[in-house]
Length: 569
Image 1: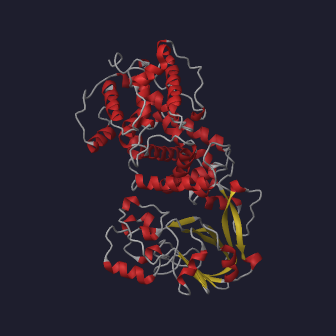
Image 2: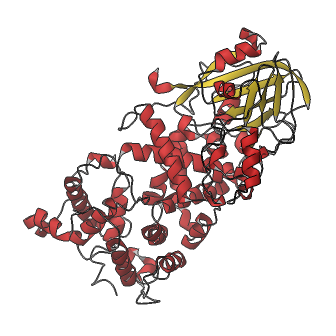
Image 3: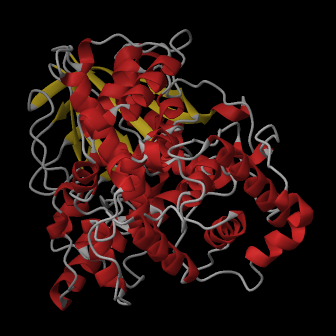
């Protein structure tokens, strides 16, 4: 048994089948791709000693800062304290934000060792300001180390990783908070049904998603999280996102058994939803095996590290602009919508909340701000521009005389239209989308998100000539378009960042003196005349949408909403 080596902290009675060492006894592999495959397949999953040795090998291979504390540093610091019995009464540092040390399969006294290690880490890494996942990771690594000093070294190397483009743990509040927003963006894109369920049942979606790392590092049973750890140490941070998305998918499936559809459920306190998800994940072993969880996590297509990095950077920038860089009391913006003060002639609070759930997560800290309404400002395109210029993004809402409701989320300032002179020139980014609420609710995203194959990695001279002659981009295509494989698409980038095989797939929004247009190519998703009175809708290549209401319609009310910084109020 591995009890003598790499198991002094383990309560073997709790390990179940993992206490039985079987399968391979060594790993003869140095190729990263092969290691990746072996980790996913669980090559060392049935041999505790081998798993511990592989972890040691993987962690030693992590590129770290020049000065990274090791086991000897721990022994020097602890001195005689290392021979004394550690105490779990030693409080954990503030940066863990109240996260306890999960016991998993550790002996009771081993939890005290984890406390001692984390406090030593705090002294050696004064730059860590927020790291709620550290207790769980320390506990996990204790299962596979000889002594506290070795575990300290492993934790230190993970924290000190300095490989470009690779991250293992969030260590600041800014990084952690932006990761929660990024998870919201990814959930909205990769598990829409589950995201809709959370929107329908929780008053504050951001509060629910703030637990996403704890779902994986904290709530999962040991048998599951140790298989995640196998892959995480090889592939890095993105594995946590994949697993959390998979957990959200399984939670939605669990809730779907015998309950009403999301639209028919009543919202409840976010704390109750968080507790419900936590209880489901803690008991997941009864319905989902570790292998099934990993299979679901890695079946998500087109999920790339580049997309995560770009989303994370964008969300960090958004938080920095709002001055949110350190831990502070969260303001309950309820998807940025206050039902007591919200008033629209077109949509109810519930309908606005549904729309808000589609909007990129980084705008969830904003409040909806009415910029223009035909009821107050009249049916004038000039006044529409006067009230909307200077704001981005904006939300366009239309109610027709037939009581149909449709609209569009538009990412770019309407003032951008002036770059094209009197000529209609399209602008905007791939985060634009169109939707309808009545007679039924449906959203239509940029077609390239649903069909990445439309973004070609080879740009022909003919397409270059066509694109430049159309003048669709504000810089007249003076920027060279980088090659962008289909799997690396990120919708918040403007169309010029993609090599598209048709100009029609990037016609997001346009306007001049006699009309505003949303979506182009073989038709328009929305076309509104200069009097904001009559319009038409049809299929367009950019969003690949059906008509959003009657193909020709009369406007009853048109509203434009902006996004006001809630923290500034």
